[in-house]
Image (cartoon, rainbow, N blue to C red):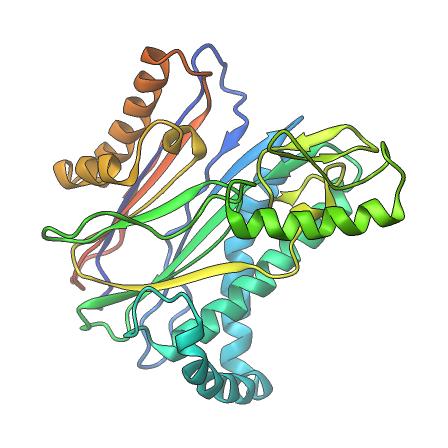
Length: 336
């Protein structure tokens, strides 16, 4: 049976001098979802960067978030109430297109609406589980999840939807002379809308809590919970119940785009983006068509640059996915 041609590679590189008990945990899921008549499967890829005193929340997100997404898709397919809801929201989505930040007007409306619902419910469920299991511990994680699907097995373009919290950035390199472009923006206070969101929460906290007890306080470019003393550079994350409650935003950032066959999707942890930009990473994936080799070169190059520039060492993780034409061959992937 024909299957959409995907080739992927992953590589995880601990910070220099660390043993294999790594705080960055990257998990890749590239098995096709359950097939339905006249509909190609979608594929999911996720990168999760743990922080705090352990990797438990990163492990939880890595093992559960993509299965949550697949389960939500099955519900949408078999529950008539959900299907009727999607039919209504699809027409609404068309009217709202000019207000959204979609990277392409060609994106399938059905895919966009379904992807947002699946991702939103899945991130919420993962956060709820993290709160139940580790709510009183200093354990958190970033999460970047990309879903890809074609409108049909023989279409020449790929629908991509990416949801994220934190600073594990996702980019795409299209074929030809197209420049590499970022699909996500880092959730830091340097991002204007994140600064405004967190400032609003901090202002409410200042009205209800005395100085030194505020749960959300902007402190030297970081979010601080004064009552616990925990501060974070990222403004959104899963878990980390002792940090500022502003980490858990009411809405999930989701971006959509459409790319042609031959494009490459890349997700990397902040250990890469702190020293390499999208153009440099795009040059690497153009040079190495083997996705595993590309993920290795991205990770090792970032580590070398950090050492040469005297930067603090960081765990590094990279996922590289080549989006090829539909071929009569199985999905292939390598990881270490």
